[in-house]
Each structure stands twice: as C-alpha cells, then as structure tokens.
Length: 614
Image (spheres, rainbow, N blue to C red):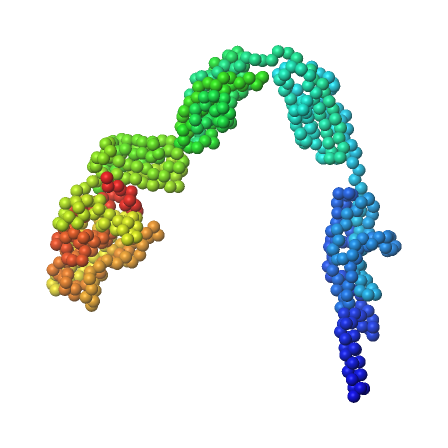
C-alpha cells in the first residue's frame, strides 16, 4: 500500500514538473532560436537624422519554434558586433541620439540560450547653431533727424547658418512696431517732436543681435483738418447688396492740396457724434482722393439687400488729421426686385389700379396689369394684392396674400384675382350667401377635419374625353354625355371638354357597367408627379334604378363631369353638385358656373388660403 502511494506521489510530482516546463526547451532536443516576424522601420540602412532634434521609433516582434519564452532588448554595437551599450529592454523603443556619430543598433530577441537580431544603420549629424549677426542696416547711421509726420523704413541684413528660423522685432521706444515677424524691415511714422529710440532685433530661437537708432523728430506738425464733407448723396447700388455714393473731394488742409484717403462708414442709426462714428462699420472700396472740388464716386457692397441704413464719409490727410463729421444720409441698399401681371381669373383680362405690396414697398398696377416691387429685402416672404383703396371696402375682387420662397435677385410672380361673386343659386342659405365659403367647400380646401388647402387642377385644358357609343332602352346615352359636356363649355365660356376617339390617350374615359347596380361615380386612375390628375374614369351603371341613365342621363353626366373638374359635393339643393340626393337641375347653376370660370383662370396648383374674404 505504501509502495502504491509512493508511485502516485512520484507521478504527481513528474506531472507537475512537466506542466511547469511546458514552455521551456526540451533538454532532450536541440534548441531552435527565435525567428524575427516583423520590424520597424524597414532597414537596415536608415536616412540621416539631426542631433539633438530628431528621434527614431523602433519596434520588432519574434516567435520561438520551441515556444520558449522570449525577451527583447536594444543594444548599440561596434564594427565587430561587440555590445557598446544596452539601450532598452522591451519590443518598442524611441531613440534620440545626443551626439553626432555613425550608429549601428540591434534589436535582439533571446530565448534561454540563443538570440536573433535585426540591424539598423544610420548617421546622426550634429547641428551647430551660430548666432545671427547684423552686418548691414538702414538707415546706415545710428543717429538721424526726421521731420515730424514723415515715415521712415528701418531694415536689417543678417548672416546666419539657419536664416529660415530668424524672427525680427522693431520698437519705437516702448511702442511695438513689429514683433517677431518673418520680414526684416518695418515702417514707422513720427508724429511727435522729441527724441525716439528705435530698436531692431533678430532672434534665431537661441541667440540674437540688436541694432539701435536715435531719432530726433523736428518740425511743425500739420494741424489743419481736411474740409468737412457736407454734400454726400446716395442711391441703391447697381447690384443687390450695394449702395452708390457721391460727394465733392476734400483737401489736405481744408480745401488746399489733395487729401490722403477717405473713410466711409455705415450704421443702423444716424451718425451724429464721435461715439456713433466709432460704432459704425467701415466699408472698403473708397476711391483715391482727387483734386479738391472734383466729384468722388464709389459703390459699397456686402450689405443686406433691401435694408435701410445711414452713411457718412470723412477725409483723412497724410498727417492723420480727420475732417469733422459731415452730413449723414439715409438710403436703401439695392435689394430684390419682383414683378408680374395681375389678371382677372375669370376673363383673363389685365386689371389696373391693383395695389401690390410687400415689406412696406408697394406699387399700383398699370392699365396692362403690370407691377414692380423694387429693393425688397432678402427675407421677403409674402406679397399682398388688394383692389380696394379704403380699408374695409370689399372691392370687386378677393384680396390675395401669396407666400414666396427660394427667391433670387429678380423673380416673377403673376397673380390671378378671383372676382367677388354673389352667391345666387342656393335655395336654403347653406353658405350664407358667401361665395368664398362655397368656393372653399366645393374645392375641398376648407382646412376642415385635416383637409389641405392646396387645390390640384388639371394641368391643361380642354380635357379630352373618350365618349364611346352606347344606347340603353332605346336612348342614345352617348349623345346625353355630349350634351352635358357642351353645357359646361357653353355656360362657362371655357374650353373644358373635347371628345377623342382614342381611349388610351384620353384624359377621361366613360365606362358602362351593365352588371352591377352601383352608384354612378368618378375614379382617379393616375396622377402626375406634382399631384395634378392624369387619368380619370366616369363609371355609369345603367341598371341603377335610383338614377336611371335613360331618364336623367343629361343630369347624371353633368354632375359627374363636375367631379371631373375637381368639384366636390354641395350641401345645397340649388346646385347641380348637391350630394346625398338627386340634383334638381340638369345643368350647372350660376354659382357653379362662376366657380369653374374662376378655377379655369387660376394657377394649376394653388393654395386656397391665398384668397382672403374680407
């Protein structure tokens, strides 16, 4: 029993020893060294680097065929491969040499007895920074005399081994003229009597050099201001967002001599004092001053189109003297133009005397119906059209309020006005005598129970109808359909319907169903991409005894043709389009005639909310 126990213990010890040595070289087999898998950078010869600026990142990985544990290190070796210095332990290493030399680095991957190496060779070039030296300067004297108001240029030429790194600074006393600029010269204007120390320095990041000038400023300063500009006038400019200005040229000393330049400023309020002037916005593009008394002109841009602003101009002489504030004018920036024609939706005739307005800008149409709104602001979004000149009067037309969007610098908007009709055909006062209420109801644009206000009409007239031959109980039904179409055309005076012999090409096809006793009805088969109808069908069911086609065919066709014209059902018995019961009349009522005549002259697609019932 003890012997067995001993064998078990020995087996466990051997098993543990085997597990603990599973990643070590098997002593019974020859050792295989590691194998380099990847290295960076690709070598062995690398580009030169600069000391002490540059550094190099090294990285490599290895695998061992015997699955031995691998250690990594970087060394520097001599020409014979002897290690000079151990640099780093681990697979990744960033090396930054400190001295210039030729370098041979090795990355070594080692198991317990052997190693494999990857080699890199490069040269490190040690940078030498020589101090910059000013060898020439302008003015070429250390002490100079300058006339007050004069401008002097100070310049230095410098020798340096790295001229691209040089930066220049100039000071007049404690006042900086230029600080660490890349150009080697600077200008300064002396505006006060006295002595000024001007200093120029150059710096390479480590060393520098300096040159100084002592400047004695003498003379009498210019104290005479340019003449004040009092005759500034202006207009809207030639392009949107511009203004055009004109004034008389000032002088250097009042009206003597040519002044140096002009300052043009704009503001949203009048510029009446120096505070207003400082708060105003300066505009580019002022002309070079001409002789005193001549006419100056300029166009200022980058302004908000169609907005009002205030403008003033001042002259500045070569000594920096600025003229007193002159006149300040108010003018409109060139904006957006809109124009078009206003016509009667029913007759198509031009309407004169119509007031068209937007954003406070208005025009009255000429006898040919033409209007033009000039200099509208960029944010214009509504155009209003009204025919009455006294607020509260109804006028002969319904007023129109049209939204505009995606406007450009000049856009066209033609407007059809709907005449103000009296409602005369209703029997029970369903619409309270309001043609506007009737119009919204019949076009299904009431905005009621989620209905839209947009009306999609046919995009062309006349509508072509395929009217096939058909008789029922001895009655020519085809002729009844033709009579109904002619009634709509004749009573409205509009070319609404025309027959065609090609059913596939027809806008409307009449279909007779002699099997199902259904209500006569209209079906929309297809629509155009913009929502307007493309193909419709009129379904007639001759066996329908509630509305027998052989007896009331003319009335039935007239009613269904009203639906073809996009009319809904009326709620009043005085109309052909009455719904829920049989119409009492064979032809369209005067209310329906007026409605269709108006729709015929309106845009193909329109928002009924544009038309306002006062």
